[in-house]
Length: 179
Image: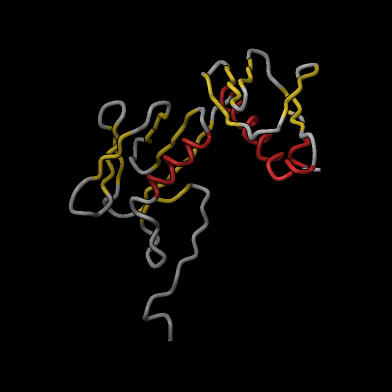
């Protein structure tokens, strides 16, 4: 049995879910999220606790995946998801342009305009070096943060660039230090 697949999901008050063939729609205080469930996986609720079940070992590979997708949807509509990024470098900064456009100045000859998809919000600190990406869909939040990081990945020699706040970087020694 899958350890993750066996874990029950507690459904908080104010959260409703509906199942349509392979799509689970979860509605909560923050909004509505759809999760795609693999074929053959069933769900049952008892006393506000949701369990994900599989009919046989043929579906063992996707048992934990299905549970994780439903849990991410439930957690997203109750608390939301967020990723934090730091912009490190002299002259590197981030600013908002309107409500759905983020402008990065990352040492290139031009500023980079990054349009935000629907359902994603961005907060920038007053120093313009810390970005918080948040939303209710975990996959979309992670993808937007990864796209922002890919605009200027951290340099291994000077550690300049866009990085996750909890990312540990290993700084490489340059030519002069490698004697």
